[in-house]
Length: 410
Image (cartoon, rainbow, N blue to C red; front, side, top):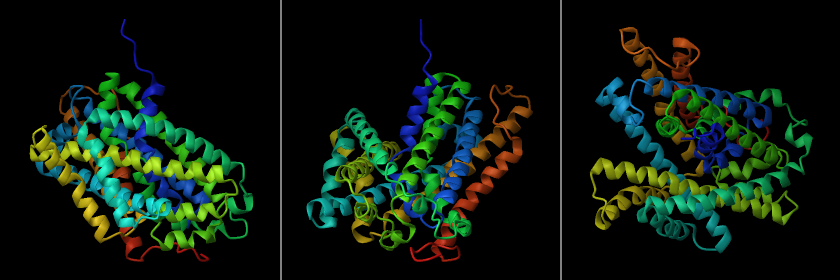
């Protein structure tokens, strides 16, 4: 008798896809909005990203279980729009690799004393080899890294939560009600932290139906949201708002955040756990995203799955982000923000367009849908507006047209 996969198992898959190095940018991006407004921004983003995943499910149900995001988008939206969607997926992958390489160099510099650029080169040389070697190697090291992340996160966050200062957490000496405008600039980073949409087709095939996949996706985004809120509460309850000034001045670099935290955490074990979690999160995300970009480019350029072919794929996957990291180390937070702005295309706009097109076809006499996302056309248009607004907020913040917290007053 064939057993049905559990909802919890699928939820954990989605949560593990969401939770990674992106969450390391949440404290710095949310420092202006602080606790209440940052949590509200995360909740709104989580709801919209769950609904957008459901819209993909609704569009996918008219295709065979093995149909991919690329296949469905090409059929419903045409080759040109699908190519633009694929380009945005690649851009997000590339900019995330750039962010991970830059941050790893800065962290390793603090740990070993090596020059940050040399440390970045060594990081790529060692860990991109795992991706070059095989998917199986990525699988094995990912299991170890995720287990380490769970343990170090639990120990580190519990240590932070046990030392919370409520005056610091809710900035009772300030005026948190005035911090709402800063939440707009946080949305692109929040959106990046809920980017699981490339896994929707796989989850549907895993369950062989949409209803279970729907609940697994909701469970996964709720788990991710809970972890993010615990992370923010732990940090904001220990590190006063004004002490984010040096972190923000360094572009939200993870190394700067860890340095600031080390000044307020009394326990060396807790500080070590958070440092370990941060490095494991970056490494896990690096090889996970690297594998996705590696496979995408191998297919795009039609490189053979041989040693020479994989070397060519390795070069086009890892050398461009490494070169950009060495030449233009703009900072972790800025890169994550750009990734979030670009990700709105395939996490918000394209899912809404796909579901509107799929519903139009169904109305014209095609198969009656088994699964429908709540909210109708209005929700699809709201998702498009949310995506456009999130991207716009990022570019407005870059142009100083939005209030951006610099760590002093405000």
